[in-house]
Image (cartoon, rainbow, N blue to C red; front, side, top):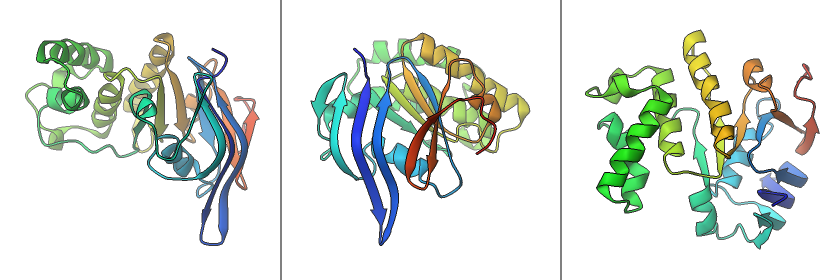
Length: 224
């Protein structure tokens, strides 16, 4: 498989403004990308399009080298692609229920749910949240719970919208440390961010949005 996801001729407009005009986007398997660009350049919009949360005009697309249509968004991608919001919503239940929500919706057997949730909690370092409520969790803890909730579904592509924004030093470091483990599991990750530590992770490729166009750049380039 040469490409996990590729899209040709992606365009997105709001009123008379062409926000995105991307000739080609190609995401490789088990690869990490940072998506950079000025505020308002369309980073979150692009992630939402890839997740099927917004529509766009697209000439052609493939997933695992097989042709697909993104309108309507296919069930194949709903299982394979997951979006994690900058401010993830937490349900007013337990940490286990929050992480296992998607498994329950998919009808996974309770015993399998419990095993996968326990593994995800250990991976994200949130086992200490047992018996507590989301209203008492820090921003970093909520972000790690959200990442665990996504990972537990075993997606092939994770779309992370500003995963370290508004987190303090230790919380940032804990979230950043999870990214290489996702790649080691064979997943691909696209992170919309301005965080230099994420941009500087080994092996991360940089995609820059500028005036609607997408450029593949050296991740070590310092200018925006």
